Amino acid sequence: MTLNKTMKLLLAGVAVTLSTSAAMAQTNLRVFVSSQHRPDVWRKAFDMYEAKNPNVKVTIETGGNTSEAQAQYLNTVMTAKDSSLDVMILDVIRPAQYAAAGWTVPFNDVLGDANAAMKRYLPAYAEANTVDGKVVALPAFADAMFLYYRKDLLEKHGVQPPQTWDELAAAAKKVTAAEKDANLQGLSFQGKAIEGAVCTFLLPYWSMGKQLVSDGKLSFDKDAAVKSLKLWKDFVDQGVAKKNIAEVATDDTRKEFQAGNVLFAVNWSYAWGQFQGGESAVKDKVGVVKLPAVQGGQPASCLGGWEWGVSAYSNNKTEAQKLVQYLSSPETSEFMAINASLLPQFPDVYTDQDVTKAVPWFASARPVVETAKARPVTPRYNEVSDIIRTTVNAVLAGQSTPEEGATQMEGRLRRVLR
Image 1 (tube, rainbow, N blue to C red):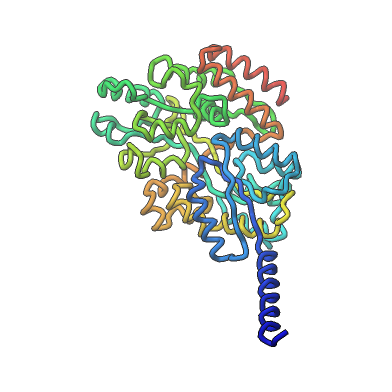
Image 2: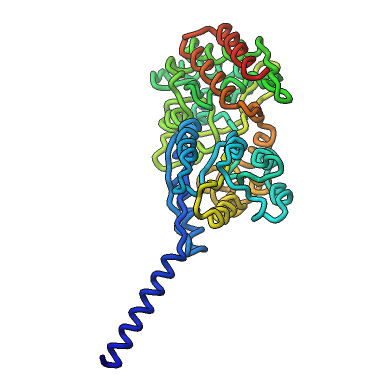
């Protein structure tokens, strides 16, 4: 064998070894992102991470346009101890549940001073992700419910943004009557038996100064519950909301408003970015204000938000935790606020010049997020949620009256929360 041939074979062997080593060094992370929360923009955030970490490849898995659909899928994956999923986005109500089930990995060892690390975030999210001193997830973004409205139509008809639900009903009737557009709904909100319907019920209930759970025990006010259910059903009966509102989920509200078919919409912050998209019929025609109050009450919003958890069954826990720390950083928070209108989980980002230039109303959104109320805190929240959302749905569908719904809700809740 000649010297040249020997050298070529040696070099080829080195190349194969290097190639194999490089392949072995690469970590492939699979991340579950809810389909309604701009996976297209999260993809760009993942691209930025990959650029800084060439040995990591991130693949997105999307699914479910409701919290329930996402949880159902993730519950199946976790129950099966499936190692194919490394990172998952979780509704703010779920980190404690997943930690209790042993499905997520704590971050304390990688955060250094965990208390100091969590103090950077808005308090509600530090609290939601800390269970018995363990940081079980890190905030992806904050959220709360707001009232979106057609700025152009209100200005056209000399109507101010409503401060009470009664004012909203009057404004909706006035504008829709004047517009004479059969496709224009006065108000869209979540009436389907999903997590959003829990918030639907609680908004006026809270506005009346009532709580559902206090110190882990039921503090149900039946009169307030009747009034809350009646408020939403009256919107349907008066023609302010459409007859089949009981079939409307969160993203249905977003799509209908974006198509120009809704005057007022109750929705989360993610909707704004899509309202301003190139294909939106309402681009530059949208206003945002805090939600109305009941007459004589105070405005109330429902605390939302999403969190990043690392699967306990991941084969890449260390790299997954590094990715999550990046995704939950001020840098990524600012990027997602500007490009996807997802509310920051850091107080300072709300007043960042680039953020307020891209999403001007974020400057006044922080007080709404900071005062938004958390859904009932209880280990049996899944049962509580099911009771509330199915009752709201039944009332809106005309299957029971507000009085019957409140009675049924109270009885079922008392069996769960003694």
